Amino acid sequence: MRVLVVEDNPLVARLVPAVLEKAFGPVEVTSVGDLEAAFRTLAHQGPPDLAVLDLGLPGHGGVDTLRRFRWKFTAVPVVVFSATEDPASVRVARELGAVGYIPKSLNAEKMAAALKEIAAGGSFFPD
Image (cartoon, rainbow, N blue to C red; front, side, top):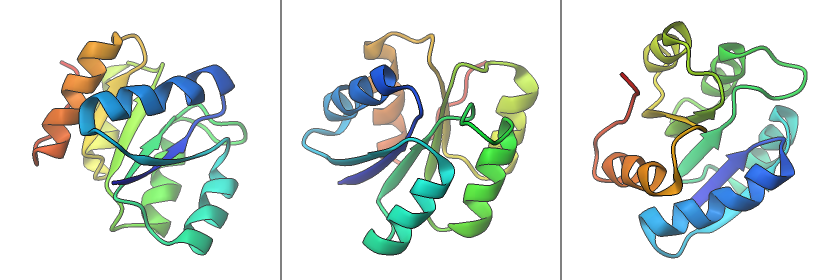
């Protein structure tokens, strides 16, 4: 499985692959720190099996990050991984076609369980 992680916090970006491996087993992870780097990576490498997208990227505001990503890469399944947990952002992410919304406040086991649910064809959105 190929996963693109779009996360500007270096510490979080280093931890996400471990959670992905806990959920999926061996994964090929490409991490980038901003949306433009994600666009360049996808143009060069082609679409991944999954994108994990932080909504708090520099230069973009909240769900607009997801909107821009989905507009450009409609076929790539996206899981939002965000510190923002407000119900409006979760609702808009679902409306924009995200397959999941994982709050950064979840522990690693709950994150892995959410990703397993998504991998099984389901979705995960906080209540």
